[in-house]
Amino acid sequence: MGIKITTTLNALAEPNRLHIVELLRAGPLTVGEIAERLGLLQPQTSKHLRVLNESGLVEVQAIANRRIYKLRQQPFQDLDDWLESFHHVWHERFDRLDDYLSELQRKD
Amino acid sequence: MGIKITTTLNALAEPNRLHIVELLRAGPLTVGEIAERLGLLQPQTSKHLRVLNESGLVEVQAIANRRIYKLRQQPFQDLDDWLESFHHVWHERFDRLDDYLSELQRKD
DNA sequence: TTTCAATATTCCTTTACAAGAATATTCTTT
DNA sequence: AAAGAATATTCTTGTAAAGGAATATTGAAA
View 1 (spheres, rainbow over the protein chains, first blue to last red):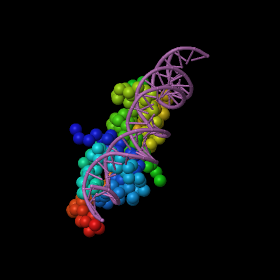
View 2 (tube, each protein chain N blue to C red; view 1 turned 90 degrees about the horizontal axis):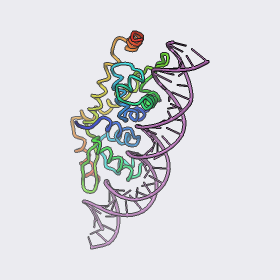
View 3 (spheres, protein in one colour; view 1 turned 90 degrees about the vertical axis):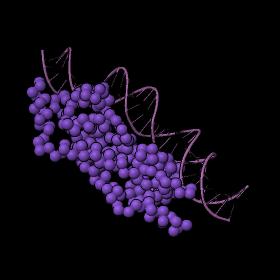
View 4 (cartoon, each protein chain N blue to C red; view 1 turned 180 degrees about the horizontal axis):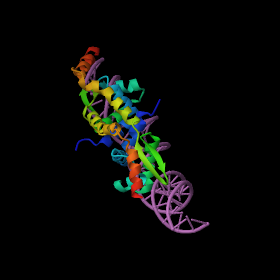
């Protein structure tokens, strides 16, 4: 069934992880570079990257003793698709609340 | 500065809250209806709705002793915009990883 | 083959938060 | 006014998870 959307959301909900992901928009980076640019300690950076990796948001490539992290498309695509399922809500030409209130009153 | 994206993500990361939001896609509902349709107890439903409300994801309209909850567009719009800032990542015609590896080697 | 650099892991402590149960609040109806 | 719905709040407890500090691992270089 692929990655659950709550897994993605949960991973991104943590501010430091969100920053990491935003940082990686500009391209792949090593752990040390991420830590430096975000002012994080290396261990916490690794821990956050672990979560991001296990959530499928990033992938790693090992080069010597460095690990290069880069974004994966899939979860972002899935989030996009999920958000699309809400588009029709705002574009309905009639206000559903009105309908609902009439409906409520009808039942009483 | 509006609603922080992590606030939105955090609210949506909880499975029951995600279900509530998905349920509200079809239109506004009362607390009791939400609880019933999702098989939740009323108190927890109210608590989740409180979080959703405080996060700006839903708004309430009181009618007599019922509270009707409906989705708000803003946070979804914001999420959409945020996701758009990633689109260019996948559409670059060249693989940034290659660039990065060359760059790493150059520095050594 | 030691030493150094980059990264990961473990342990500990603290905090956030979700569920359950009970109770309070508010409005309606009789 | 009293009783009953619908909803919100409080209190408690269990658990996940984040940060800090220390240490383990892996590869490179001297």
